[in-house]
Image (cartoon, rainbow, N blue to C red):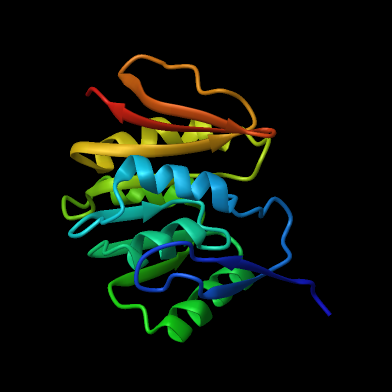
Length: 185
């Protein structure tokens, strides 16, 4: 039997609700302390925000955003088992305004760029730890950003700003580096 893991929503409407997710290679939810810091940076109420959780995994970031009033969240993950768990958790929470896409995150972002309606205020980029996916995803999310959008990045290395990006806030918790950035393009 597969190992079952849990993550706790830390704020908003579903505060303290626990969600389960399957044991899957590369899946490690953002720690409570890191999520608390992130949502302090973003503001406790995300009322009206459209969010994209591009490497959704446990769904901790996307569900946290919905719990805090985001108007719409899209979660994308490549694993069918992970997507089934995301849909099951959405059902348990009676989550509205949520879409789960079982797809390759990079391919999804590339295809979404052609859809003018697919624009977001907040994008969460927390790919499998130690992968090269973050560097590949950053240029693909640029066309998906609304004016003033913020992008959350989580990785094993500190985010080195590149052309067109500026760091708004940064932190570190153990081996995890996390950054809130904005695109100047």
